Image 1 (tube, rainbow, N blue to C red):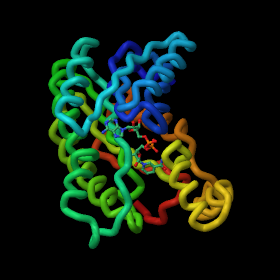
Image 2 (image 1 turned 90 degrees about the vertical axis):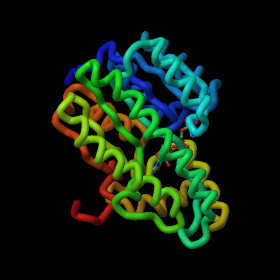
Image 3 (image 1 turned 45 degrees about the vertical axis):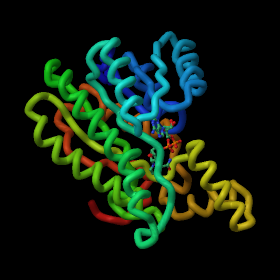
Length: 261
Ligand code: NAD
């Protein structure tokens, strides 16, 4: 199926590794022009090299989305490239901690990292999307939006906020050809997850593969996901083909969650 995104400008944030990187590359291979943003320039350059090998172009931009200057840089770079019609809004996960123990400053910081950049980027992108009569906005959240995860109070709280924002926005802009959805990854083998599982393995005195196997035993698919498996779903949600799919919260988790909806 042709996704219908050839030559459209895609802004992909959190693109230096993991899920964001896989989405950036997938969109580029599908013919989109990609502006890839993250804090680490070195990793973004290697992403651009990889795209070039396949004859595709990814524009790397190093910026911290939790700062006003970083956001301004992203907007300026995007404006130079054209009109952003596809937006994948993604940043890293917050620190762990219990709801009763985290400080207000920690909640504020998590909102700066996970909620405000999503609001600011999408509000800005809407201007161009409305002019184009076409837009796709996708926020990466977490499976925690359907089933909060113990000891991850910041993630559970802020992902729910992003989901509420996305649902509200989706109804406001649907008539203008703009869809707004969220994608919650389940346990997915990214660099970050490898770090977390290495820590978990050390604490339990087991090897990394044993720590993965323990998690996999709770997942009906019997393994963790691959970033590419999340990226394929994201690319569809960002495609011209997903034109009647909006206001949804899609979890891609190998069947992990037990809930009916
Ligand atoms: P990751 O930590 O490997 O990658 C995050 C990316 O975001 C990196 O490119 C990083 O540079 C970038 N980033 C972080 N903060 C930024 C900032 N302030 N400005 C610009 N760039 C920033 O994460 P991942 O494993 O690929 O996951 C992506 C998202 O999905 C995260 O929010 C994560 O919490 C969430 N998630 C992941 C899993 C999983 O199993 N991998 C499960 C549930 C939710």
